Length: 127
Length: 140
Length: 252
Image (cartoon, helix red, strand yellow):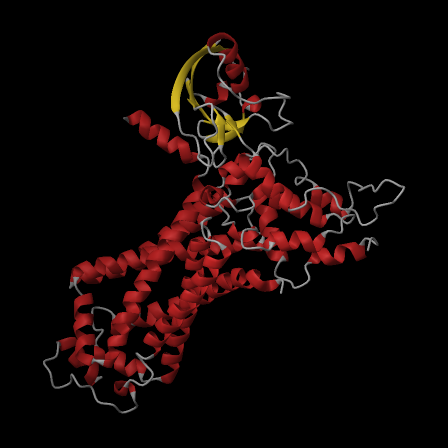
C-alpha cells in the first residue's frame, strides 16, 4: 500500500513543477470561467434591487465566505502561475523553471493568499 | 498573415497582465475598501458606486477582457485534443465567439440601460426594513 | 554485485497500434555490478532467462538514441542509466509512451518521424551547386546559437514525455520543433517559408504549454522548451527574423 503510494509519487516526480503548473492553470482557469458565469448572473440582478439584495445577503453567509476564500486561492494560483508562464515565454527563467514555480508561483502565492484570506476569515468570525 | 495564431498567444499574456491590474482594483473597491468590509455591501452601496460612469467603464472593460482571456484559454484546451480536426476547430471557435458575445451582452446590460443606475435614481429598497449598517451607509 | 528485480511491461507479438504500454508485467531477477546499466540487465535477461524479451539497442554509448524506454516511469536511454544511482532494488521498465507498441519494449517511431519529416529536418542550402564547404565557425552567431540545439539523437524521449502528444497524435512534438528552429537559424538554409508554415500551424508550436517534461527527459540536455518558446516569439512578426538571416549572411 505504502509502496504503491511511493511509486505513484515517483512516477511523476521528474515532471512535477512543470506539470503541476500546467494542471493548476487549466483547472483554476476553468473554475474561474465557471465562476465568471455565476458572477455575471448575479450582477445582472442589479436590474432587480430586491433580488440583488437577497443575493448579497446570501453571500454574507459563512459558507459563501468560504467559497470566497476558495475563489481567492484560485485567482492567486492562476495569476502567479500565469506570471511565471509569461516570464518563461518572454525568455526569462527557461533554465530555472522549477525554482520559478516553487518560489514565485507557490511561495509568493501562499503569502498573498494568506494576506487576503485572513481579513475575510477574521471578519466572518467577528460577525 | 504570419501573426494569425501568434496574436492570440500574445493577447492571452497581455490580457492576463491587464486582468491582474483590473482585478486588484475590482477586488479592492468591492471587498476591502473601508465602507464595504464587514458585510456593509448592499444594493444601495452598489447603486451609488455604479451610477458613476467611470466605474461602469472599468467593470465593463474588466468583463470584456476576462471573457476574451477565459474563452481563448478554453479554446486552447479544446484544441489540444487530437480528435479535433481543423473543421471542428473552426466550429468551436465560432461557438465560443457567439458565447462570448451573448455573455458580454448579459453582463453589460447589468449596467447599461439599468434605470436604477440613472443619476438621481432612488433606492427602491429604502422604505423596506434595513440593517443598521446599511442605514449608516445611506445616511453618510 | 547486487540483485535487482526488473519489472518489465511486456506485450504481444502483434502491433498494439496507437496504445501506450498495455500488457502484463513480468519480473526478472538480475545480478548486476554497481557500474552496470539497465541495458546490461536487459541483455542478461535475454541471454540467460528469457530469450523472447524484445528490446532495441545499438551503440550502447548514448549516441544513437535506439534504446529509449521508460525506466521507473521516466523516459531514459537504457544504456546510459546505471542501476546503482536509481537507488531501488525494483526497477520498472516499460516501452515509451504515446507511441504504438510493437512488442515488449519495442515501439514504432513512425509517428515521431512523421512529425520530424514535416519540418524538413535536412539542410536546404541556398547555394546548391557551391564548390566550397559551407563552414560555420563555432564563434559565429549561428555557431553560438546552435550550441545545445544540434545534439538531438531522435530517441523519442521528449515526444514520449510530453503530455500533449498523449492526447493529440498530430502535435509536432519538441524534437521536430527544435530541429525546425535549428534549420531556421542556419544562414545557409533557405527553406524558411515552408518550415514556418508547419511550425506556425495549429499543431505546431502553439500546442506547447511549457510543461518542461521534454527538457527533463532529453538525454542530451537540449533545452527544448526554450527552442519552442523562441519560435513562438519569432512568429509574432509578420516576416520572422529568419527571413532576414539569408540576406544578412549574403546567401539569398
